[in-house]
Length: 387
Image 1 (spheres, one colour):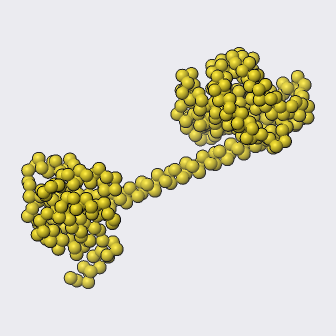
Image 2 (spheres, one colour; image 1 turned 180 degrees about the vertical axis):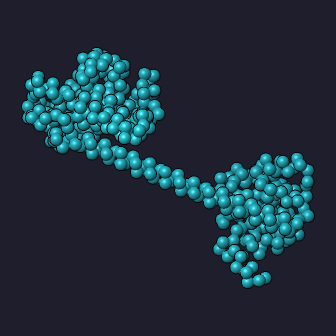
Image 3 (cartoon, helix red, strand yellow; image 1 turned 90 degrees about the vertical axis):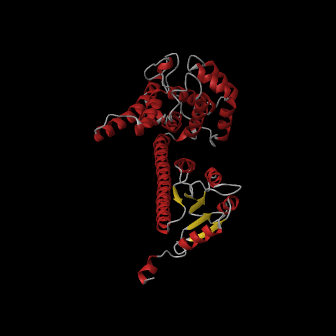
């Protein structure tokens, strides 16, 4: 053996392991001597012994498997091997004296990758073993790369979601900064919307509107419902008393301001990009816009800013409407004390079919204890509030 040959041999650490399974000692010896220069070689003289070896670590990288063996033939061995997650990807080459096409087809159907017929040709054995091991190495490398890519995609998606959620919270907090008496209103109302959405997700009237990720979008967008309060003058927004009728008319414009601002942001980005499609990345912002714009609409058409009625009100806004009112009633304001939970519930129920979608109120009734738990767990330390 030349010096160059020594350098081309794999190190002991890099050597692949081959399991030879044959009940004939002479075949085990012949194949072992032929392969041991390049590979680690293990041997099993029966199907049962082969399964024991395959179940132990380190597992072989390739199996040379005799077809005709007593008690458990090669077909049964490969069938069991392919049933186990730990061994199903180990390549198998059948070694056999049978040359009928039907026998070869049966072995290939069970998962064998190649056939070597007896008597053995050393060159063919080495070539086919090397070819299958190279293919396995390539498959393993591709699987590792795919797994890395999947993890990287998951990491990037999670990172983007965190950035989006952070951006939403930051925008929602802009309104909080100006209206310091909003306390935990954003967190509570988001929880109420989530409770209602999950209760209604299988309801015939709501299933389509809450499918395909839209339920999650509604929950994430809920904190932006009052973003339009940024556009309300301080004299009105921060007034430490009840608003006059004229001031309340100005306050009511916050819904249109918020909805229009988000919609305008979408349009400007699309215009800059030369696109028209508002699905995908923009669908979340569309949901946020409709919540901000329509969450003060009422089921009977007496709400604002448009006066939509019934099913014309987006589902997201119908959920937000009840959540917002429940929180406003159950929390204190500078001009009122909080209603008791019983009184709050009574007012919500009275709004069924007038202020609120009847089915949304029914969902609230079914989940009333969850609402009460959120109200208690997220109660403001200083119970002050301005609607």
